[in-house]
Length: 267
Ligand SMILES: Nc1nc2c(ncn2[C@@H]2O[C@H](COP(=O)(O)OP(=O)(O)OP(=O)(O)O)[C@@H](O)[C@H]2O)c(=O)[nH]1
Image (cartoon, rainbow, N blue to C red; front, side, top):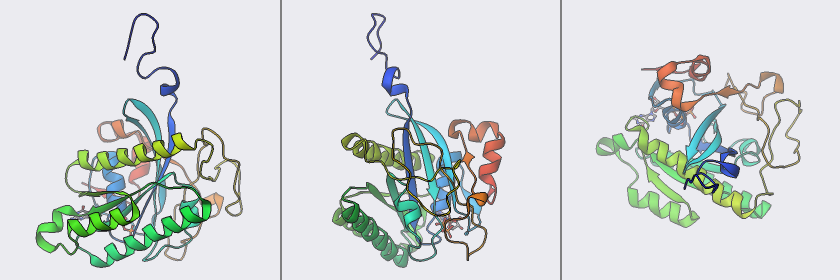
């Protein structure tokens, strides 16, 4: 609500301080984690990719009129969760992805949800997760997981469920990411001091030593992995930060966007 009589305007005051949200995308290899990430950030679908690339991207979003600094970690586990602390200790919210044309990937997604449930139990906190059935465009040809099965699995873990396609419309993909932000925001509002740990880019850490959680997380670090054997938290020297302004990414193709596209071929 805006007013000329001194009442707060929408988007002013505390609302103009960006909410910091870290989101990790989990799932078996090939389910479309990178494709969804790139679709969300650039509105485009990728055809080729580096399966070993694990990066964290940063995007300024507006969700429900609130500015949000969203960091997205596109993870690169192989077939099962590995070194999961790197995202468990970092993310406020998770997208667990399977492909509707792969039962194996659906079974893996259940493993990821169990991992998150266990982590929540151990840390006595709750971590919002959304379950995504990707490659919906393939459903008419080769669906192996029904929508009801996806919904039932999500129901078992109390999370939201969507079926999407990284190669269809951008709005559905954006909606899912924004829902994840809303879930994170609800959780942060409940316990604002109980923030996940994070790795600072400025301070070299030889391993995942926790830093003091505080309001307004500093910049995070990001894994760029180039070989299959390097699936662990990389040394800080390898870390890099990639920033993308999603609203400008497609139209202006500024340098940050080109950085994002490293490793991807876009058409
Ligand atoms: N038809 C269709 N293909 C998709 C979709 N999303 C991704 N793909 C394709 O599926 C393959 C794997 O996609 P990625 O985004 O690399 O999958 P990923 O989960 O990041 O895989 P890793 O990097 O190995 O962990 C690529 O060939 C994509 O082009 C989709 O929604 N529909």
